[in-house]
Image 1 (cartoon, rainbow, N blue to C red):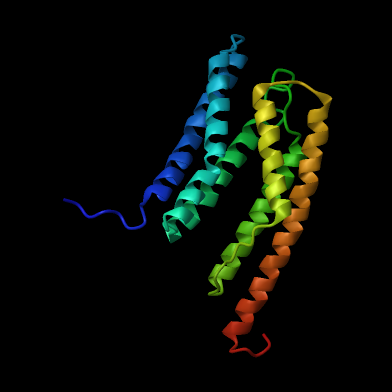
Image 2: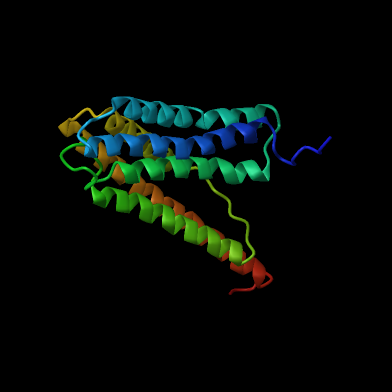
Length: 208
């Protein structure tokens, strides 16, 4: 009998299932886009993509709840959980951004908004890598602005996947963009503070 994989508990299995749902979501939506390009929309693929997105997004809190209540918090889970979240949101955002089938898919995200979201995430990733390279431990402090931005982004993505045209969509997208910007400033401040602490510790408590 093979030994169990360390850290691969129920919470991690749920997170892995969420992560594996992302490429299936992408595939379903791409098939829907191909059907639009061919002039014969196959709405079943769009519905499947919508259900997969909402399903993966809805189970976001489930793996965390299982990990806390069953004392299954592991380093693997800490890595996979945010990876599953980002993979789902970023892939959906890119697929639903103009000029992808402009005039056929409605509503879609403006390019500027997608660049804003991707720039924030890229900035935070670089900051984390720098801290790690300096020998520090990255500590992610959840911010209310970040939680609101993520929730609004999920609402906008579901709205776009449902393909319900409305002028209100654009307003909600830019409200989300405001919270993305605010959260980015907050996280950047946290990263700078952690970087300074890491450099301070590396120099034995002396000024860097």
